[in-house]
Image 1 (cartoon, one colour):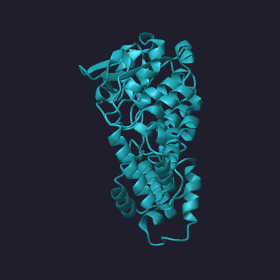
Image 2 (cartoon, rainbow, N blue to C red; image 1 turned 30 degrees about the vertical axis):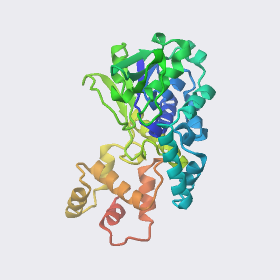
Image 3 (cartoon, one colour; image 1 turned 45 degrees about the vertical axis):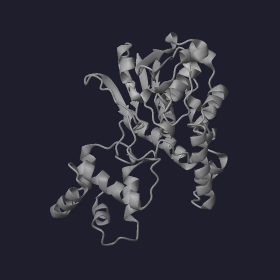
Length: 349
């Protein structure tokens, strides 16, 4: 059986939306999914066979309202306007949270009511599990859907996502609960202990405890190479970038593509050796040291990515190395920059 473990991490969970689409496109069949916090929310949609809808849900839902922010504050954030209106809205949000003794959960409840069909979740062949912590005795609660009462599924998802900044509210069995990250932000072990032989772990760099799993376990880790923003970053542009990042990072892992921050089609080591055949040894050593590279392949890729960042190439594309080199060679600037000059001296033929 193949499992999917989804870390917690607030709005960073948008990364998992893109990652799941890439897994599906690559033909990865998921038999069960376990999530913590926002990972439990995403996992519930995947387990109810609504995973393909995750990007839409993240793009179209009022993410600000989901985390208790006012409409005015969300509009200021998305417009990038740090002005008097922004500060006024920020102060009002803070005052409202203080008065209510925490962030209201109405937005999260509304999203679950609108988007999650519990009947479909329970009938689905894809298993679903989550992690939360009961507050009164700090007992970790790790449950699969067979262990949950149907009418309490949504409450369990809320319990798994219950950060201390939320307004305290009794949920299951008249108890208070804490975010599952207080026990295990990456619920890989739940799946392994349940008999899953291979687990895909999608990391968000969520805040919480990371429980180790056996080193010899077949766990394939998909993680961001760049920042996903903070856990309450509600900017629509950030959400979209995280979705795209998750998609391309996952393709890179599953298809074993090349690249560090960017994604390149795979080329053999001999290809990179041929590229470097006319580079003077002292120039190559200088560049290799500057880029902290170990091989000819790594040197070329790091040099290309160095320039691609400076020239604002999009991260969200699978590049052909030859075409990138040709494009950089045509640039009529940075004539004396040694990284640019190195690329110009690479021999494609």
